[in-house]
Image 1 (spheres, rainbow, N blue to C red):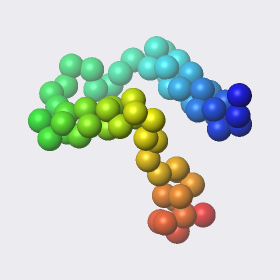
Image 2: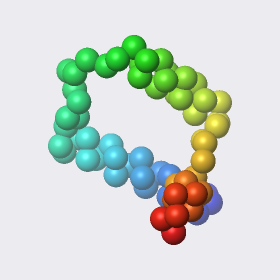
Image 3: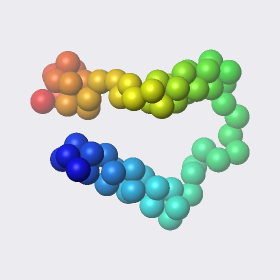
Image 4: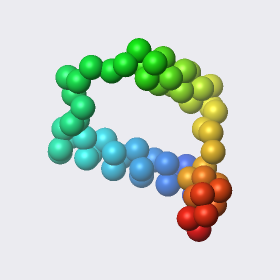
Length: 65
């Protein structure tokens, strides 16, 4: 397992545990059609292995590093 794979696995585990403990604050709220479409498109991309830009790259572009 690579360092990045371990980091991703830990992040997913922490997110799952937080949702389990705190619940989903958005549960039951309506979602706009445009947002739903975007989320579904993003889900398909991730399923194909497209992970987008890394957090470090985005932070660098925004001058946060």
